[in-house]
Image (cartoon, rainbow, N blue to C red; front, top):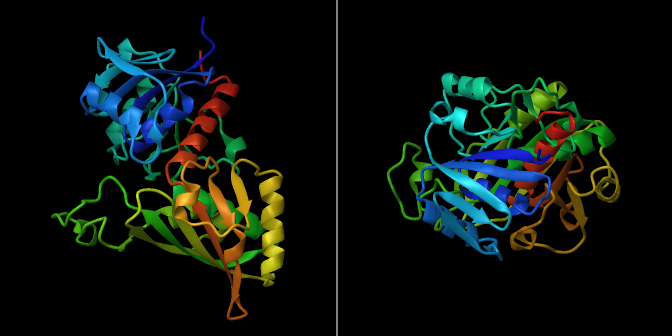
Length: 338
């Protein structure tokens, strides 16, 4: 009997393809099913030719509705709702829903009934058992957690920064602005949408947007409830984002003290999750980085002798996908698979 973790993907968009790229040659992982609305050949094509991350580098083909990549042979199912998946025909240990859809409660119940464990990337936490952010509360994962949310890439950055800054310097209040790459649900040209700002061209505008990150972080840190606020801007780049964080502290540290602390955490307990740099980097420099954030030491400053301002960069898809696979393996280590 195989000891591999059997993974199903609900949705094969950007995050789904990142997960496959990161995991297809991992000897501990087996992708057994992908459910997506796209045509099989189109799914293969988008996997092997990525406009951000480049060619896959290995051959992939479709045979009898199976996607074959090296030693992975993955059944392709037509996309739909979780309740429409033929659960009796598939055997998965973990289903990862990367659709971004806010499913109604009955669809979450389908996951609870038929899936051993589900990781859902939509940041709606109404029906999840636990939010897990590796580096913050990854050790809290339990076999009783049927549905887990890894929050969002931006939330992970904010949660990690607040963990460090609050542990070291006692955060009183925080204000975040994320400058985020455009997303697949934004139009290339102006187009009618319910959200009028988001109806404007993604490649021609800086577009203010809402972010759920502050609400999710407050769920992780109840003592900061009502003390964290934030906004977002989608900008005309395909990948590479940053979080601009302003914090108020009980005792204001110096920029040098903050940088030293961040370097210590990045080289210590959060190595591989948090990175530290003194190079004058820009957004493109973090594309393909596997960490959740890269702390920009050159950007640290004290504002008006009262506030601390820090900047962190992140690949808003790649590092996030890597953390999801780490959650999958953590769950398996607890015995959450056959």
